[in-house]
Image (cartoon, rainbow, N blue to C red; front, side):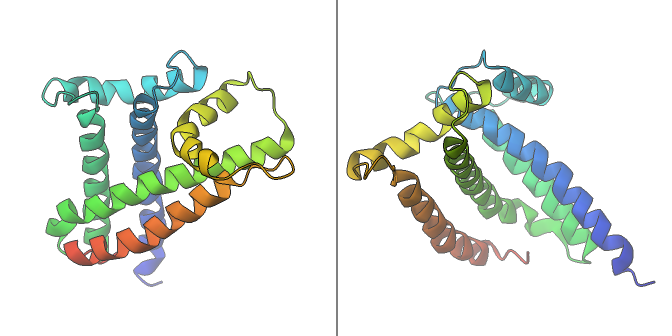
Amino acid sequence: MSSSYLITPLVFLIQTLFGLYAAIVAMRFLLQWARADFHNPVSQFIVKATSPVLRPLRQFIPGYQGIDVASLVLIWLLTTVELALLALLHGLLPFGAIGWAIPSTVELFINLFLFTILLRVVLSWLNPDPYNPMVILLTQLTDPLLRPAQRQIPVFSGVDFSPMLVLIGLTLLNMLLIPPLNWLVGNPF
């Protein structure tokens, strides 16, 4: 057996655990940004999952003009630790992980928006209950991006093409922004 036999599952576990928790913290940040309903059961789960870590962090890192800076710092710290552990597993020095985490954090937010808009589109085909907590939350999270596009593109024959425009824009943003950022910070991943 080679050493990669054990490294591959460890990489998977590290990326999954850190990535999932960073995504939950990012969702909390986006819930506040979009002014989503915090009484929603899905929002309550996100708040309960993140409060034990965010509450003490907020004592040192206050918000700034309605922006939850502590959540952003926590996402960046989680991503930094994840990338440092991955660097160690691959035999690299982990010192650059502080910078490597910046493009990874930006990419996380872009991917969350891509996923939520895609999920909203798929759910619209199934005609779900509009009072379902997940549907309400998806609408609240994606409306800030979709509304400007809906003003630009009229509905044709009952079909809203604004999600396609936003998905294309987010994908282009990912393709044009993340590689230069990775190059700038020397991200080996």
